[in-house]
Amino acid sequence: MSKSEKIKLYVQDTTGQRECVADVDTDATWGETMNSILVSMALPRNNPSTGTIWAGRLEREGRHLHASEVVGQSLQDNDRIVLQPELVAA
Image 1 (cartoon, rainbow, N blue to C red):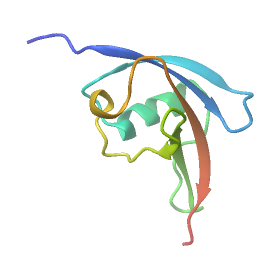
Image 2: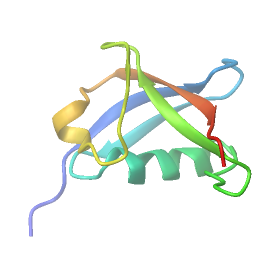
Image 3: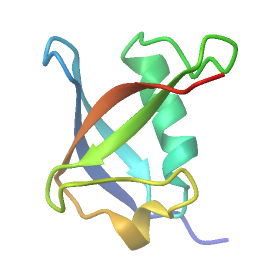
Image 4: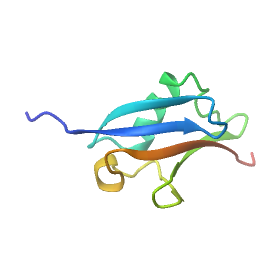
């Protein structure tokens, strides 16, 4: 079995007060990656009961990432991502 490749991502919350540098597997989905980043940044996980979810905004392209996107196909080494809370009507 071959070892998964990794890329480095720079992630911060919308306030800029919480930041992390994450080495992530290129074969993981953005949803899986974002969940582990939320834990490492001590941010609350997605909470469907309150209608709060997180979205990752890829600064290089100025767009939100979809949870199903594969890291190695959508992101590049040293990309910057801003995690933004979004409220969803219940």
